[in-house]
Length: 142
Image 1 (cartoon, rainbow, N blue to C red):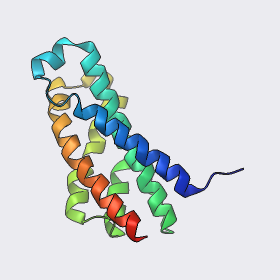
Image 2: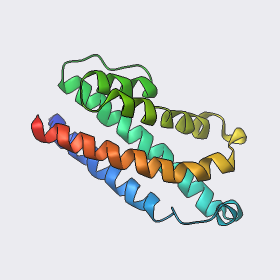
Image 3: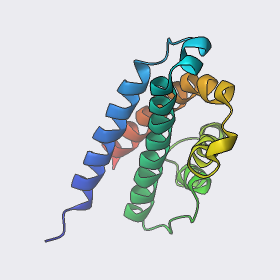
């Protein structure tokens, strides 16, 4: 028996909130602490990956719910969400590049720049807090 899409979306939202909370616990580590700990580095990398992937899964579910075609790449899913008025285009253009960090982590592992990953912790927390707020507002109305 197929589960309802709303139930799956709620599970994805709960997972995203959980990953977000976990990343907040690491936001105060210094660059030196980050570089000296494989545990910190791998944990942050994985959380960044999970946050982006889960958000894009949610984007695709919302777009499907709206009867829209789902994009073939992560970046475009944020642009398409703005085109559907889930959040402003200005915000989509700010958050969409976070998909690039995910791609670097997943596909170009040897080329990871620790400075960029460490700096992206706070950026990710800022963007995805706003993402969750916009999404919550949209879902309440629909």
